Amino acid sequence: MAGIFEVFIDGESFFRFRIKSPEGAVIAVSTPFEDKPAVVAGIAAARECAGMGLVTDLCPAAVIRDPAATVRQSTDPHNAGTQVCHEPREAVDGFRARAKELRRASAAPRWTGAA
Image (cartoon, rainbow, N blue to C red):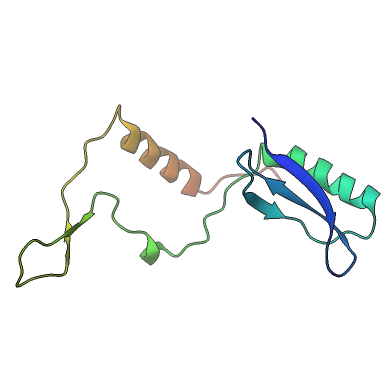
């Protein structure tokens, strides 16, 4: 089932739309629009761009944690904290290798053809 666009008037009397998941959770809220035709045009633009939108990762590299590391609670009463174990997880059908290839390809500089 597809998401739902809801048009509403905010507290400052501007038109806005929100995108809701099929379960009812609000996914996004638009910027304010002056009138209803403008908000309808905004919904059309969101529909057009949403399927082909690029993802830009703005997170610093230091924030990324090791996906192979697992956190476990210690059972030793003298060391009651958490322990990080660096045991490699099993790859399912080469999923991790393919994901790594895609990350490398997306991070590589590309020629856009714009001059």
